[in-house]
Image (cartoon, rainbow, N blue to C red; front, side, top):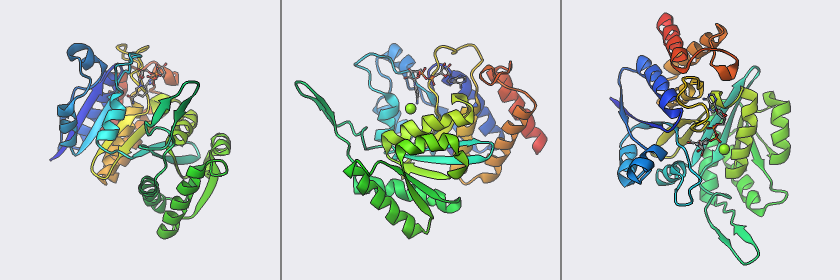
Length: 321
Ligand code: NAI
Ligand code: MG
């Protein structure tokens, strides 16, 4: 029995996650799902968005399927996603971006860099410290090299021409790529943001630091047809967490129009995490066939609802077996 914690979260999380869960359940009857309530809705009701009991529940699972949570502009509210990433030490943020003629995976360091949280304000200036450690760089480099070894090559996104901290990052990535026997190149992150849009076919696995990865992956998201299409994984040595890249989308929540593909594809990444490549490929194919029939949610120009799209994918899956 494989235990999967399911966090719908807020907004369209309540719509897209049930679809992803039913698709996973259809291919993996051995998955036992249990719900964990996290997010703004819970905060409004109980005054806590996520507590130590919640973290313990998440740690007890073999993997976590997560929707999205609303982060209100309230200064007293701590980001739940950041808390979970920190408490579960999910140091690798993995974002595949795929389309016609390209298949890229961005591997972003998730715990340090400019998001280390070491910052202060002085009289006339504010400072944020960019921390790049050898340990943090090495573990993300190893994660990227493991992927690149199964695929083609590695690009190390950096700004080492300006930032000393990136000289360290690039050195460690080079060492790990050489040790793994992975062909690699280094690219400056600003030029890379432009080139990934112009020549996406040139890229395979890209490893980079926290904020650069955040920006690069959203930029590259344009190539895949928008936020409704993009899955992601947050991986550590002990825990694994899968979520669509998009947020809770309050502007369309509750209308059954959200695109569930990002959530379904996050489920595909979960299957691959358990080395279930057969079912992962079957679900990918079912999504592809559904789209090929012109069945699409409104963000892709169609008229199909969230639930109905999920039902169409389930039908394709049952035909395939
Ligand atoms: P968002 O991703 O929720 O929405 C941006 C735009 O994309 C909206 O117009 C939305 O309708 C559209 N969109 C997003 N997902 C879609 C889907 N599956 N199908 C069709 N259209 C989709 O980002 P936004 O508006 O910046 O943030 C809304 C809330 O979500 C905020 O409270 C934010 O803090 C939170 N958020 C949470 C994330 C997480 O839980 N990891 C990530 C990003 C934002
Ligand atoms: Mg972002």
